[in-house]
Length: 201
Image (tube, rainbow, N blue to C red; front, top):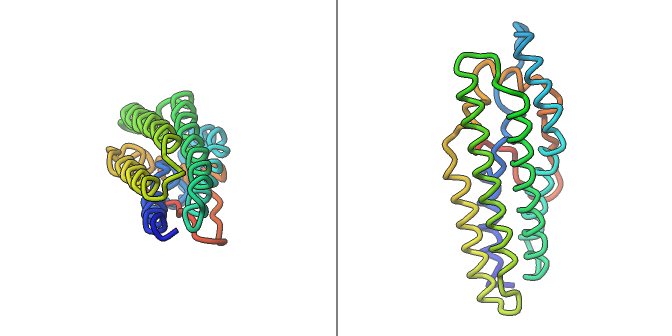
């Protein structure tokens, strides 16, 4: 698979660059003894709802990276389409949970919440578009598949770069500290095989 391997690695690199916007929740901030009960309760509510989505996103990341390493075109197509769909669904569900949780009780909380929801929904739609793009790839022609996969990788790169940083901003300051204390916002990482790390977008 000499034709597709470099592209596969590019795809994996693009993904590990922080495709899942909300994964940095578990790494941001540090716990503080000076708790704000209202903020802690808000974080607990949100993190309790999004934990399954964070796990789904992490699994999707790992699936793409693992398959991209040495997969056959048909296998890569199937794995990537399923993973991008999971990423789309997860971001959409996290946006819905954030909407339901309401604005965090901090200065500018409503703006932080609304901007993060918008960014997550935009990413969800972009991942959904990648699903269609991957399914349309020609797996019967190695060169065409490699060229098509390169465009998918570029699309993934664009998602990483197009964000306004709204999700990242939500995870800073007191809100970030409150989220970091919640077990539900901690994302399990795998030490087996290369995997996408939970990095900020």
